[in-house]
Image 1 (tube, rainbow, N blue to C red):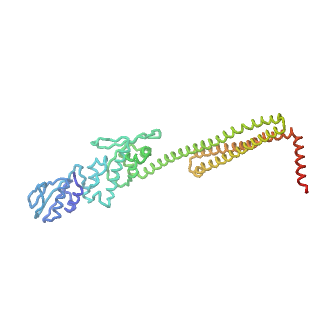
Image 2 (tube, rainbow, N blue to C red):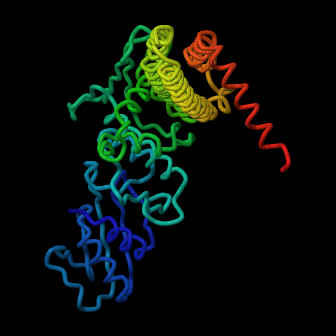
Image 3 (tube, helix red, strand yellow):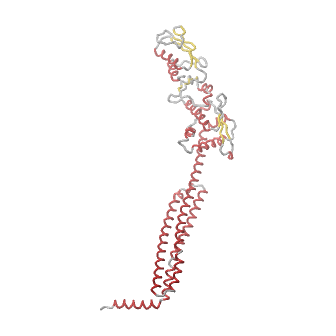
Length: 428
Protein backbone atom coordinates (compact mmCIF):
# COMPACT_ATOMS: atom_id res chain seq x y z
CA UNK A 1 0.00 0.00 0.00
CA UNK A 2 1.28 3.43 -0.94
CA UNK A 3 2.48 5.69 1.88
CA UNK A 4 1.75 9.27 0.85
CA UNK A 5 3.42 10.75 3.94
CA UNK A 6 6.69 8.95 3.11
CA UNK A 7 6.51 10.19 -0.48
CA UNK A 8 5.92 13.80 0.62
CA UNK A 9 8.86 13.67 3.02
CA UNK A 10 11.14 12.27 0.29
CA UNK A 11 9.86 14.66 -2.39
CA UNK A 12 10.48 17.68 -0.17
CA UNK A 13 13.97 16.45 0.76
CA UNK A 14 14.73 16.19 -2.96
CA UNK A 15 13.77 19.85 -3.34
CA UNK A 16 10.39 19.21 -5.04
CA UNK A 17 11.64 18.59 -8.60
CA UNK A 18 9.24 19.68 -11.34
CA UNK A 19 7.35 17.05 -13.32
CA UNK A 20 8.88 16.71 -16.75
CA UNK A 21 5.95 14.72 -18.09
CA UNK A 22 2.45 14.26 -16.81
CA UNK A 23 3.56 11.95 -14.03
CA UNK A 24 7.38 11.72 -13.78
CA UNK A 25 10.25 13.84 -12.50
CA UNK A 26 14.08 13.77 -12.76
CA UNK A 27 16.59 14.46 -10.05
CA UNK A 28 20.38 14.80 -10.20
CA UNK A 29 22.95 15.55 -7.49
CA UNK A 30 26.76 15.76 -7.68
CA UNK A 31 27.57 15.14 -4.03
CA UNK A 32 26.62 12.68 -1.36
CA UNK A 33 24.62 13.61 1.72
CA UNK A 34 22.91 11.51 4.35
CA UNK A 35 19.73 13.55 3.93
CA UNK A 36 19.68 12.83 0.19
CA UNK A 37 20.22 9.11 0.78
CA UNK A 38 17.35 9.12 3.30
CA UNK A 39 15.10 10.80 0.71
CA UNK A 40 15.86 8.20 -1.98
CA UNK A 41 15.22 5.34 0.44
CA UNK A 42 11.94 6.96 1.58
CA UNK A 43 10.91 7.28 -2.06
CA UNK A 44 11.54 3.55 -2.53
CA UNK A 45 9.51 2.67 0.58
CA UNK A 46 6.58 4.93 -0.28
CA UNK A 47 5.48 2.66 -3.15
CA UNK A 48 3.76 5.58 -4.85
CA UNK A 49 5.37 4.79 -8.21
CA UNK A 50 8.50 3.24 -9.68
CA UNK A 51 12.06 4.20 -10.57
CA UNK A 52 12.35 4.41 -14.33
CA UNK A 53 16.06 5.05 -13.89
CA UNK A 54 18.45 5.09 -10.93
CA UNK A 55 22.15 5.86 -11.70
CA UNK A 56 24.80 6.02 -9.00
CA UNK A 57 28.22 7.18 -10.16
CA UNK A 58 27.14 6.49 -13.74
CA UNK A 59 26.07 2.90 -13.09
CA UNK A 60 22.41 1.78 -13.16
CA UNK A 61 21.25 0.27 -9.89
CA UNK A 62 18.22 -1.88 -9.24
CA UNK A 63 16.07 -0.04 -6.66
CA UNK A 64 15.24 -3.28 -4.90
CA UNK A 65 18.92 -4.00 -4.29
CA UNK A 66 20.08 -0.47 -3.51
CA UNK A 67 21.10 0.17 0.09
CA UNK A 68 22.74 3.57 -0.46
CA UNK A 69 24.96 2.87 2.51
CA UNK A 70 28.13 3.79 0.63
CA UNK A 71 28.83 7.43 -0.31
CA UNK A 72 28.65 8.31 -4.00
CA UNK A 73 29.99 11.08 -6.16
CA UNK A 74 26.81 11.68 -8.09
CA UNK A 75 23.30 10.28 -8.38
CA UNK A 76 20.63 10.61 -11.01
CA UNK A 77 17.10 9.22 -10.97
CA UNK A 78 13.83 9.31 -12.85
CA UNK A 79 10.72 8.52 -10.85
CA UNK A 80 7.34 7.74 -12.42
CA UNK A 81 4.27 8.26 -10.27
CA UNK A 82 1.42 5.77 -10.38
CA UNK A 83 -1.21 7.35 -12.68
CA UNK A 84 -3.97 4.82 -12.10
CA UNK A 85 -5.69 6.99 -9.48
CA UNK A 86 -5.09 4.39 -6.76
CA UNK A 87 -2.19 6.44 -5.37
CA UNK A 88 -3.39 9.84 -4.07
CA UNK A 89 -0.53 11.93 -5.42
CA UNK A 90 -1.46 14.44 -8.12
CA UNK A 91 0.13 17.25 -10.11
CA UNK A 92 -2.67 19.63 -9.08
CA UNK A 93 -6.28 19.63 -7.98
CA UNK A 94 -7.52 19.56 -11.59
CA UNK A 95 -5.65 16.30 -12.20
CA UNK A 96 -7.10 14.88 -8.98
CA UNK A 97 -10.66 15.53 -10.13
CA UNK A 98 -9.96 14.37 -13.68
CA UNK A 99 -8.44 11.04 -12.63
CA UNK A 100 -10.41 10.13 -9.56
CA UNK A 101 -14.00 9.46 -10.59
CA UNK A 102 -14.21 7.08 -7.65
CA UNK A 103 -14.17 10.04 -5.28
CA UNK A 104 -17.78 10.79 -6.16
CA UNK A 105 -18.62 7.35 -4.75
CA UNK A 106 -16.50 7.36 -1.61
CA UNK A 107 -14.81 9.77 0.78
CA UNK A 108 -11.43 11.23 -0.08
CA UNK A 109 -8.43 9.43 1.42
CA UNK A 110 -7.14 10.92 4.69
CA UNK A 111 -3.90 11.94 2.96
CA UNK A 112 -3.39 13.15 -0.59
CA UNK A 113 -0.73 15.43 -2.04
CA UNK A 114 -0.75 18.12 -4.74
CA UNK A 115 2.73 18.46 -6.22
CA UNK A 116 2.51 21.89 -7.85
CA UNK A 117 1.05 23.58 -4.76
CA UNK A 118 3.00 21.50 -2.21
CA UNK A 119 -0.28 20.82 -0.39
CA UNK A 120 -0.69 17.81 1.86
CA UNK A 121 -4.38 17.42 2.68
CA UNK A 122 -3.81 16.52 6.33
CA UNK A 123 -1.50 19.44 7.12
CA UNK A 124 -2.70 22.50 8.98
CA UNK A 125 -3.73 25.06 8.00
CA UNK A 126 -5.95 23.35 5.45
CA UNK A 127 -5.83 24.71 1.93
CA UNK A 128 -9.23 26.35 1.14
CA UNK A 129 -9.63 24.38 -2.10
CA UNK A 130 -8.77 21.11 -0.39
CA UNK A 131 -11.18 21.88 2.41
CA UNK A 132 -13.95 22.62 -0.09
CA UNK A 133 -13.15 19.47 -2.09
CA UNK A 134 -13.30 17.33 1.04
CA UNK A 135 -16.66 18.83 1.94
CA UNK A 136 -18.12 18.20 -1.53
CA UNK A 137 -16.90 14.59 -1.60
CA UNK A 138 -18.34 14.01 1.86
CA UNK A 139 -21.60 15.63 0.75
CA UNK A 140 -21.86 13.17 -2.16
CA UNK A 141 -21.27 10.19 0.12
CA UNK A 142 -23.93 11.41 2.55
CA UNK A 143 -26.40 12.13 -0.25
CA UNK A 144 -25.95 8.54 -1.42
CA UNK A 145 -27.01 7.35 2.03
CA UNK A 146 -30.07 9.64 1.91
CA UNK A 147 -31.09 8.73 -1.64
CA UNK A 148 -33.66 6.03 -2.31
CA UNK A 149 -31.57 4.62 -5.16
CA UNK A 150 -28.03 5.10 -6.42
CA UNK A 151 -25.99 3.62 -9.25
CA UNK A 152 -23.82 0.77 -7.98
CA UNK A 153 -21.93 0.35 -11.28
CA UNK A 154 -18.44 1.65 -10.55
CA UNK A 155 -17.55 1.46 -14.23
CA UNK A 156 -20.30 3.90 -15.13
CA UNK A 157 -19.18 7.36 -16.22
CA UNK A 158 -21.95 9.05 -14.26
CA UNK A 159 -22.98 8.41 -10.69
CA UNK A 160 -26.76 8.62 -10.27
CA UNK A 161 -28.67 9.41 -7.07
CA UNK A 162 -32.49 9.22 -7.10
CA UNK A 163 -34.67 10.90 -4.47
CA UNK A 164 -38.38 10.05 -4.29
CA UNK A 165 -40.97 12.25 -2.55
CA UNK A 166 -43.01 10.55 0.17
CA UNK A 167 -46.03 12.68 -0.81
CA UNK A 168 -46.14 13.20 -4.57
CA UNK A 169 -49.39 15.18 -4.42
CA UNK A 170 -47.49 18.34 -3.48
CA UNK A 171 -45.44 18.59 -6.68
CA UNK A 172 -42.65 16.79 -8.51
CA UNK A 173 -42.29 13.15 -7.53
CA UNK A 174 -38.60 12.39 -8.10
CA UNK A 175 -35.30 14.17 -8.54
CA UNK A 176 -32.17 12.60 -9.99
CA UNK A 177 -28.71 14.00 -9.29
CA UNK A 178 -25.48 13.26 -11.16
CA UNK A 179 -22.73 14.28 -8.71
CA UNK A 180 -19.43 15.30 -10.25
CA UNK A 181 -16.20 17.04 -9.35
CA UNK A 182 -15.24 20.28 -11.02
CA UNK A 183 -12.92 23.10 -9.98
CA UNK A 184 -15.73 25.63 -10.34
CA UNK A 185 -17.56 23.90 -7.47
CA UNK A 186 -14.68 24.61 -5.11
CA UNK A 187 -15.63 28.28 -4.95
CA UNK A 188 -18.75 27.43 -2.92
CA UNK A 189 -18.86 26.75 0.78
CA UNK A 190 -20.69 23.57 1.72
CA UNK A 191 -21.40 22.66 5.34
CA UNK A 192 -21.77 18.94 5.93
CA UNK A 193 -23.00 18.99 9.55
CA UNK A 194 -26.62 18.58 8.41
CA UNK A 195 -26.12 15.60 6.08
CA UNK A 196 -23.75 13.98 8.57
CA UNK A 197 -26.44 14.14 11.27
CA UNK A 198 -28.99 12.51 8.93
CA UNK A 199 -26.97 9.39 8.16
CA UNK A 200 -28.72 6.08 8.78
CA UNK A 201 -26.06 5.10 11.31
CA UNK A 202 -27.45 7.77 13.68
CA UNK A 203 -30.83 6.07 14.04
CA UNK A 204 -29.97 4.73 17.51
CA UNK A 205 -29.31 8.23 18.88
CA UNK A 206 -32.12 10.08 17.09
CA UNK A 207 -35.58 8.45 17.22
CA UNK A 208 -36.95 11.09 14.81
CA UNK A 209 -34.28 10.42 12.18
CA UNK A 210 -36.57 8.66 9.69
CA UNK A 211 -38.94 11.62 9.59
CA UNK A 212 -36.07 14.11 9.34
CA UNK A 213 -34.61 12.16 6.41
CA UNK A 214 -38.02 12.24 4.70
CA UNK A 215 -38.22 16.02 5.25
CA UNK A 216 -34.70 16.36 3.78
CA UNK A 217 -35.73 14.49 0.62
CA UNK A 218 -38.92 16.52 0.27
CA UNK A 219 -36.96 19.76 0.74
CA UNK A 220 -34.37 18.65 -1.83
CA UNK A 221 -37.08 17.96 -4.41
CA UNK A 222 -38.77 21.27 -3.61
CA UNK A 223 -35.46 23.16 -3.91
CA UNK A 224 -34.50 21.61 -7.24
CA UNK A 225 -37.95 21.63 -8.82
CA UNK A 226 -37.92 23.09 -12.32
CA UNK A 227 -34.34 21.97 -13.09
CA UNK A 228 -34.15 18.82 -15.18
CA UNK A 229 -30.47 18.15 -15.89
CA UNK A 230 -28.89 15.95 -13.20
CA UNK A 231 -25.49 17.65 -13.31
CA UNK A 232 -27.01 21.12 -13.24
CA UNK A 233 -29.18 20.08 -10.30
CA UNK A 234 -26.06 19.02 -8.40
CA UNK A 235 -24.28 22.25 -9.29
CA UNK A 236 -27.31 24.24 -8.14
CA UNK A 237 -27.44 22.33 -4.86
CA UNK A 238 -23.77 23.01 -4.13
CA UNK A 239 -23.92 26.67 -5.15
CA UNK A 240 -27.07 27.38 -3.12
CA UNK A 241 -26.38 25.06 -0.21
CA UNK A 242 -27.07 27.67 2.48
CA UNK A 243 -30.48 28.45 0.95
CA UNK A 244 -31.31 24.75 0.81
CA UNK A 245 -30.36 24.30 4.48
CA UNK A 246 -32.61 27.24 5.35
CA UNK A 247 -35.48 25.64 3.40
CA UNK A 248 -34.95 22.33 5.18
CA UNK A 249 -34.87 23.99 8.60
CA UNK A 250 -38.08 25.86 7.83
CA UNK A 251 -39.80 22.66 6.70
CA UNK A 252 -38.53 20.83 9.77
CA UNK A 253 -39.72 23.65 12.04
CA UNK A 254 -43.14 23.50 10.39
CA UNK A 255 -43.31 19.76 10.99
CA UNK A 256 -42.16 20.08 14.61
CA UNK A 257 -44.66 22.89 15.20
CA UNK A 258 -47.44 20.77 13.77
CA UNK A 259 -46.34 17.85 15.91
CA UNK A 260 -46.17 20.11 18.97
CA UNK A 261 -49.59 21.63 18.27
CA UNK A 262 -51.07 18.17 17.82
CA UNK A 263 -49.62 17.20 21.17
CA UNK A 264 -51.12 20.36 22.74
CA UNK A 265 -54.51 19.45 21.26
CA UNK A 266 -54.24 16.07 22.92
CA UNK A 267 -53.30 17.72 26.22
CA UNK A 268 -56.32 20.06 26.00
CA UNK A 269 -58.63 17.16 25.19
CA UNK A 270 -57.25 15.12 28.10
CA UNK A 271 -57.60 18.06 30.50
CA UNK A 272 -61.15 18.67 29.31
CA UNK A 273 -62.12 15.02 29.83
CA UNK A 274 -60.47 14.95 33.27
CA UNK A 275 -62.29 18.08 34.50
CA UNK A 276 -65.61 16.94 33.04
CA UNK A 277 -65.18 13.53 34.68
CA UNK A 278 -64.60 15.14 38.07
CA UNK A 279 -67.71 17.31 37.63
CA UNK A 280 -69.68 14.24 36.63
CA UNK A 281 -68.63 12.53 39.87
CA UNK A 282 -69.87 15.53 41.87
CA UNK A 283 -73.21 15.41 40.03
CA UNK A 284 -73.42 11.66 40.62
CA UNK A 285 -72.83 12.09 44.33
CA UNK A 286 -75.48 14.83 44.51
CA UNK A 287 -78.01 12.76 42.56
CA UNK A 288 -77.76 9.90 45.02
CA UNK A 289 -78.18 12.10 48.06
CA UNK A 290 -80.92 14.42 46.80
CA UNK A 291 -83.28 11.43 46.51
CA UNK A 292 -83.59 11.61 50.30
CA UNK A 293 -85.59 14.87 49.93
CA UNK A 294 -88.73 13.20 48.41
CA UNK A 295 -88.43 10.39 50.94
CA UNK A 296 -88.30 12.94 53.74
CA UNK A 297 -91.38 14.72 52.34
CA UNK A 298 -93.27 11.43 52.51
CA UNK A 299 -92.28 11.22 56.17
CA UNK A 300 -94.01 14.57 56.74
CA UNK A 301 -97.35 12.83 56.19
CA UNK A 302 -96.60 10.64 59.19
CA UNK A 303 -96.63 13.74 61.38
CA UNK A 304 -100.30 14.34 60.56
CA UNK A 305 -101.09 10.78 61.62
CA UNK A 306 -99.00 10.87 64.80
CA UNK A 307 -100.89 9.70 67.91
CA UNK A 308 -99.15 12.11 70.24
CA UNK A 309 -97.18 15.29 70.30
CA UNK A 310 -94.11 13.41 71.43
CA UNK A 311 -94.23 11.10 68.43
CA UNK A 312 -94.70 14.09 66.13
CA UNK A 313 -91.82 15.94 67.77
CA UNK A 314 -89.51 12.96 67.28
CA UNK A 315 -90.44 12.84 63.58
CA UNK A 316 -89.79 16.58 63.20
CA UNK A 317 -86.41 16.25 64.93
CA UNK A 318 -85.43 13.35 62.66
CA UNK A 319 -86.36 15.24 59.51
CA UNK A 320 -84.48 18.31 60.71
CA UNK A 321 -81.35 16.29 61.40
CA UNK A 322 -81.66 14.62 57.98
CA UNK A 323 -81.92 18.02 56.25
CA UNK A 324 -78.95 19.34 58.22
CA UNK A 325 -76.78 16.36 57.28
CA UNK A 326 -77.78 16.67 53.63
CA UNK A 327 -76.95 20.38 53.70
CA UNK A 328 -73.50 19.65 55.12
CA UNK A 329 -72.94 17.02 52.46
CA UNK A 330 -73.84 19.53 49.76
CA UNK A 331 -71.50 22.05 51.39
CA UNK A 332 -68.69 19.49 51.05
CA UNK A 333 -69.64 19.01 47.39
CA UNK A 334 -69.39 22.78 46.98
CA UNK A 335 -65.81 22.64 48.29
CA UNK A 336 -65.08 19.83 45.81
CA UNK A 337 -66.55 21.99 43.06
CA UNK A 338 -64.24 24.87 44.08
CA UNK A 339 -61.20 22.58 43.89
CA UNK A 340 -62.20 21.35 40.43
CA UNK A 341 -62.63 24.94 39.25
CA UNK A 342 -59.21 25.88 40.61
CA UNK A 343 -57.65 22.84 38.92
CA UNK A 344 -59.21 23.83 35.61
CA UNK A 345 -57.67 27.29 35.86
CA UNK A 346 -54.25 25.84 36.65
CA UNK A 347 -54.39 23.25 33.84
CA UNK A 348 -55.28 25.82 31.17
CA UNK A 349 -53.29 28.82 32.40
CA UNK A 350 -50.08 27.66 30.67
CA UNK A 351 -51.93 27.26 27.37
CA UNK A 352 -53.47 30.73 27.61
CA UNK A 353 -50.04 32.28 28.25
CA UNK A 354 -48.78 30.73 24.97
CA UNK A 355 -52.00 31.12 23.00
CA UNK A 356 -50.58 33.94 20.86
CA UNK A 357 -48.20 31.43 19.26
CA UNK A 358 -50.96 28.91 18.48
CA UNK A 359 -52.59 28.62 15.05
CA UNK A 360 -56.23 29.70 14.69
CA UNK A 361 -57.71 26.19 14.89
CA UNK A 362 -55.78 25.39 18.07
CA UNK A 363 -56.89 28.68 19.66
CA UNK A 364 -60.46 27.82 18.76
CA UNK A 365 -60.14 24.36 20.33
CA UNK A 366 -58.72 25.90 23.51
CA UNK A 367 -61.48 28.52 23.72
CA UNK A 368 -64.24 25.98 23.05
CA UNK A 369 -62.90 23.64 25.72
CA UNK A 370 -62.67 26.36 28.36
CA UNK A 371 -66.06 27.89 27.46
CA UNK A 372 -67.72 24.47 27.68
CA UNK A 373 -66.16 23.74 31.07
CA UNK A 374 -67.13 27.17 32.38
CA UNK A 375 -70.75 26.56 31.34
CA UNK A 376 -70.69 23.22 33.15
CA UNK A 377 -69.29 24.95 36.22
CA UNK A 378 -72.05 27.57 36.21
CA UNK A 379 -74.76 24.92 35.94
CA UNK A 380 -73.19 22.84 38.70
CA UNK A 381 -72.88 25.87 40.95
CA UNK A 382 -76.54 26.79 40.45
CA UNK A 383 -77.55 23.19 41.11
CA UNK A 384 -75.60 23.09 44.37
CA UNK A 385 -77.15 26.36 45.60
CA UNK A 386 -80.66 25.23 44.66
CA UNK A 387 -80.25 21.83 46.26
CA UNK A 388 -78.91 23.30 49.48
CA UNK A 389 -82.13 25.29 49.68
CA UNK A 390 -84.34 22.36 48.70
CA UNK A 391 -82.82 20.01 51.27
CA UNK A 392 -84.37 22.14 54.05
CA UNK A 393 -87.93 21.83 52.67
CA UNK A 394 -88.76 18.60 54.57
CA UNK A 395 -87.58 20.09 57.87
CA UNK A 396 -89.47 23.34 57.27
CA UNK A 397 -92.60 21.50 56.16
CA UNK A 398 -92.48 19.13 59.13
CA UNK A 399 -91.97 21.96 61.57
CA UNK A 400 -94.83 23.98 60.06
CA UNK A 401 -97.25 21.03 60.08
CA UNK A 402 -96.27 20.07 63.62
CA UNK A 403 -96.85 23.64 64.78
CA UNK A 404 -100.24 23.81 63.09
CA UNK A 405 -101.52 20.51 64.51
CA UNK A 406 -100.24 20.98 68.01
CA UNK A 407 -100.48 24.75 68.25
CA UNK A 408 -102.66 24.52 71.40
CA UNK A 409 -100.16 22.39 73.20
CA UNK A 410 -97.35 24.56 71.95
CA UNK A 411 -99.12 27.73 73.10
CA UNK A 412 -99.79 26.24 76.53
CA UNK A 413 -96.22 25.05 76.78
CA UNK A 414 -94.92 28.44 75.76
CA UNK A 415 -97.01 30.13 78.48
CA UNK A 416 -95.71 27.76 81.13
CA UNK A 417 -92.17 28.42 80.03
CA UNK A 418 -92.76 32.18 80.20
CA UNK A 419 -94.17 31.87 83.74
CA UNK A 420 -91.18 29.83 84.76
CA UNK A 421 -88.80 32.37 83.38
CA UNK A 422 -90.66 35.22 85.05
CA UNK A 423 -90.65 33.45 88.38
CA UNK A 424 -86.97 32.91 88.12
CA UNK A 425 -86.44 36.57 87.35
CA UNK A 426 -88.42 37.85 90.40
CA UNK A 427 -86.02 38.72 93.27
CA UNK A 428 -86.49 36.85 96.54
